[in-house]
Image (tube, rainbow, N blue to C red; front, top):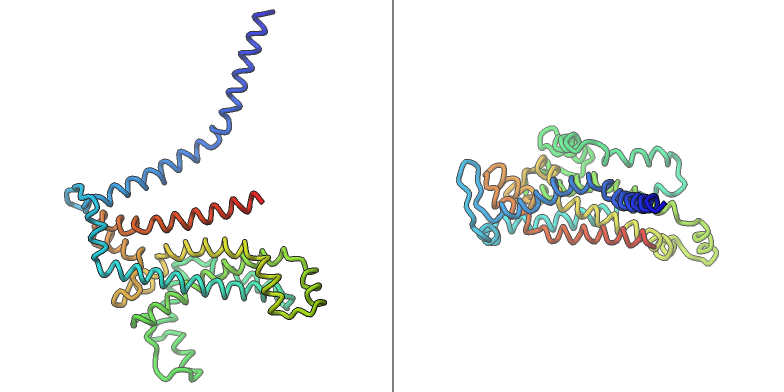
Length: 304
């Protein structure tokens, strides 16, 4: 009898141990994936940034030399300002247009369901396909935008959309806003769907106008969704590469050169991997801060 009791206790301890380890077994594949594909490349990249690693040459440790050279590189400094300008302007326009689209599509209009479906098209179309269409539209010869503007009498000469510094920046911002505004619109629209109509009816009885309703009812109700969507699209815009590279390749005269295209040119075209990685790592703290803001804000709202 004593032997059986000990075996039951032993069996119980085994079952407790098994059940306590089971959650770790479930998350083990994810942890292994993160370690192999995220943690290891991250620290490996930091190590490369401290060397003069180049294709076909010897690699030696040079410490912070790559970072010091970048701080003196006018092209890199220009890419920093361009990145900030591109991100701030694009995100602002995407938020404004996205909110406007969401408010309109939330109202009772004919074809609302079809319009909501069409809203997804810019976001759903493959980036490469849409960018090549935009390149044709921006073209100086045969471009549809110049043809429309000329035909309507708005311009008397062709606009060099991708050939002048100012218009090149305008062009990539237009494409980024066209592609990214639907994300804001869909996110805000989901928040608008949760607002009770009783609030608007009560405000109407109290004599509130459309602007007052938007400021005191709509904005507070969608604040959380809007902030999260804005943070996410800021991260995406800050790291944008395809739109800029396929349209302008950072030109003309580095007017659209951003950190992502600078790193690509430095690492792939000039094969200076150490300096290319260092140019990206210098802005890693800002990206980590934005990611932490998104994660912390999401977890906070989930606990409420």
